[in-house]
Image (cartoon, rainbow, N blue to C red):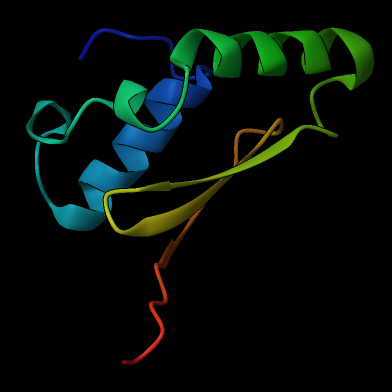
Length: 84
């Protein structure tokens, strides 16, 4: 995958692919759960305002709760579903 490693979209997909031990292209498009252009703009704008460190976004993707910060950190936690 040819992409900028500072790109939050790339960072999310790469982190999930690594955790699942699959190539990134085998994952569903991230655009099915978040507007990728808006996500990039949010981080780009945050970087211009505060070095990006204050930006934090949480989404659910591929059965993971994903948190990505302006500092480039991606944290994955399995989605916790209530028992029925």
